[in-house]
Image (cartoon, rainbow, N blue to C red; front, side, top):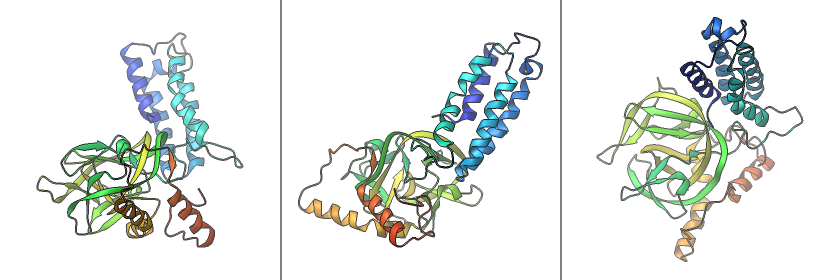
Amino acid sequence: MMSSRRVLYLTLFFLSRFDLIKSSTANCPVEADPATILSCVAIDAVGLVQATKGNIRVFCTMAERFMECVKTKTRGCVGEEFVRGSLSELIELSQKCCVNKDEKMSEECPFFSRPQCFSLNDTAKTPNGDEISIENLKIGEKVLAIDHNDQIISTEVVAILHYEKNLPALFYTFTTDSGHQLSLTPEHLVYIGNQKYIQARYIDSNEHQLFIAGRNGQLKSSRILSIDVQIKRGYATPITQHGTLLVNNVSSSCYASIYHHSIGHLAMAPLRWAHQAKQIFGLINTSETNENGIHWYPKALNNLVHTFVPFPGLFTSTSGKI
C-alpha cells in the first residue's frame, strides 16, 4: 500500500502532465495558485508521524483534515473527481484504523499493535550465496546470521513466529551509504554494533550505523543515508538458532515487540530445543507451507506473561493478550 503522500505526489504529477487541473469555473483554487494544494501535505505528514508513535487519535484527526483540505482546494476543478478518487488509499486506511471508543481496531490497520518483523520482499542469503525471499523461507532452511562475536555464521530457521501474506504493516526502510536497504516494523530490533540492538523506531541516522556483510565475510559499519516510513503488505518473523539474520546483507535481530534481544532469545529457547529434537528423529518438514497467523508458542507465552507477571519494561507493543 502506498503512503497517502506518495499518492498525492503522483496525482499532482499526473494532473500537471496532462493539464487536467483546469478550471471548469472561475473558482478553481488550484488554477489560481497550484502550490496551494501542497499545504495539505503538511497535515498528512504530521498525522503519519504520530501514527508511527502509536497516537492513532491524532492520525485520524489529521487524515480527516487532510482529505477535507484536498477536496476544498480542488473544488470547481475539472480534475476534482480524479483527485478525490486518489484519496481512496487514505480513506481505506482511516476506516480500518479510526474507530469509536468502544470498537475494536481492525487487524488490517497497519498501526495495529501485534508482533511483526521483516517485509516479505526482502531476502536472506544461504551459505552457498543464494538469495531467498523472506516470504519463501522455510523451517530447516540454512541462512547467514551473526554470532555474539560479530562473526558471520551459518544458522538454521527453527520457526516462523508470525506470517501474513497480505496484511498491511508500517515499516521503517533504512538506506545506507553502501547502497543496502532494510525494512523493519517499528518495534523490531536491529543491530547497531557492540552487541547492542535497538528498535527500528529509535534509530537516529546521526547517531547510529547499521552493519552489513563485507566482501571478506566480516561485518562492517555503514552510515544511514535515509529513513523512510512506508506501508507495505506482507510480513514474516523467521527465528533462527542464533536469533539473528542477515536480511539484504544487513544484520538484524529476529525479535520484535521487546526491548532486549537477549531476553527475546532466551524466551525462544524451547523452540530451539524442540527443533533440535525433531532433527534427531528426522521430523523436520522443509516443504511445509507457511500459513497466515501467529505461532502458538509466542501467543501462549505473551498471554501467560500478561496474565500472571506483567512486565511493561520488557514488552512494548503487545499490551495485552493476543
